[in-house]
Image (cartoon, rainbow, N blue to C red; front, side, top):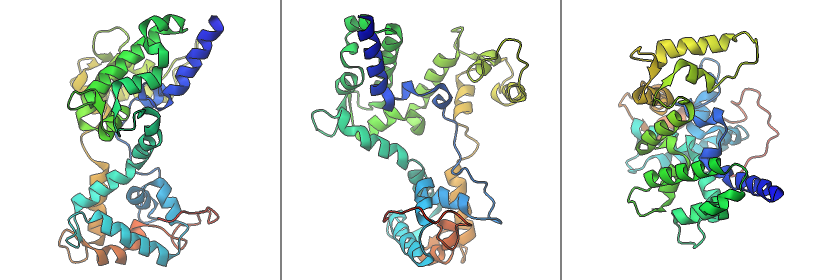
Length: 320
């Protein structure tokens, strides 16, 4: 029986790979991410702009193209960005495109696993379909007694159900593709932010008082060895908590402060990049871009073999 329990636990873990609650601790809290790992320094290169505009993987593809091919494909992208087909790209349209490219991996991941959950092939996923696929017979309360860490799986199931209900806007316990995406990636949806805050508090708040103090904040990212001096980066994080996390200086982070921490509201990376691209390419200063203006400044938007600054040219590329 013990062997069976271990095998079941392993099976559950493998099934839960696409489920957010099983992510490693370091990946649980989703800070407002930048658009590229490269520094944004246009005086050196446009790699930041390329990855912001195309996404990291697509930027690699464009690095393999000739300038002529790159401009041709950019022209096709411009046509897609121009939603109202008026011949111009506004800052808002550009921002929406950048957000789309940055979140492309999320939708690709959902599409990849969609058929695993949609058992009746109705292009929707019910809570029962998800529960059955993810937890199997362990979703039956009695069956939890055969699982090594039964309490953990019970809590995961309860947490998944709560999040599923939050993502399910009309309350029918059947998720559309968009709702299921919000369930798996709540950090990307405004209406799920309260749930992200709740789960963050549950994970970090060890004394159960509903707030996060500095020790709980540090314990979530660092467990010291015996007699180990505190590393400098931990000291820096401690000061970050005091100076920037605990905004009202009452010694802990409440729900509002945690929301501010995991999703800063001072700026929107996509909006800033869209404004930058418009400013640099808008030759007639009408605060919008024509297709010609974008193509005239094509090397800021996309790369090619002529502008990839020594990147490896041996990688294969797929057609756009």
